[in-house]
Length: 255
Image 1 (cartoon, rainbow, N blue to C red):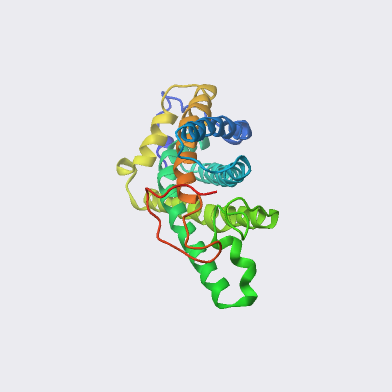
Image 2: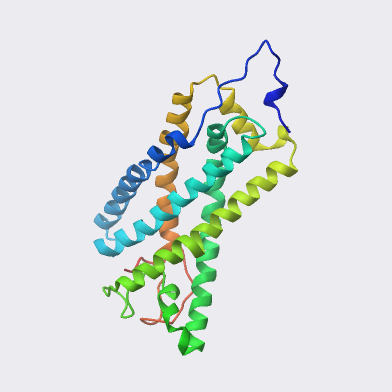
C-alpha cells in the first residue's frame, strides 16, 4: 500500500530520514530517563514508601534498561522494514513508539506472571529444577529473602527479564501493531496516520530525530520505567523462597 509514491512530480517527496544513524545516541536517553526514575524513587524513599537498598534498586533498573534497549532495536528494525513500502524509517519509529509502550507494559505484566508461576511450580515439584528458584522470585536476589544477595540470582533474573519477559512482550506488542497495519486500511490506522504526520511534517531529519529519538523518549521511557518497576518489583510472599501470595496494587515494595 505505497502512499508516498502516489505524490505528483510537482510535489517532491520528503527526505527519507534514517533511524539507525541517530539510534545509538538515542540509547543515551535511557540514562536521562533512568535519572528521572531515580528521582522518583528518591521521593518515595523520603516518604517512607521505598524499602529497597541501593544494590537491589540498581539491579532492578539494569534489568529494565536491558529490556528497553532491546525494544528500541526491535522497533528500529521494524521501522526500516515498513519504510520499504511507505514513508521513512524514522517516521515509522516515531509512530510505533507510543503504541509499543502501552502494549509492551501490559505484556510485561503477563509474561512476568507466567514465567514466575511456572518456575515456582517446577522448582517445587522437581528437586532437579531447583536452579529455577531465582526465576520464581523476581526482584529477590538471594534465597534468604530481604537483604540477601547472590550474583547467580541476579544474572538468572537478568536473563529472565530480557529473554523470557522483555523479548516476548515486545515481540507480541510489535506483532499486534504490524498485524493492524496489514488488516486496517491506511486511512483508518492510527499508527500509519502518525507515521504519515511525521513524514509530511515539513521538519528536517535532524528536527524529527530530536523529537522522535530524544524529547518523546525521555518522557515515555521515564514513565515506562516507573510503571514496569511496579510490575517487576518483588511481590510479597509467605516465606523466603517458594510461597506465593496474589499481588495487590497497594502491596508494599520489598527488597
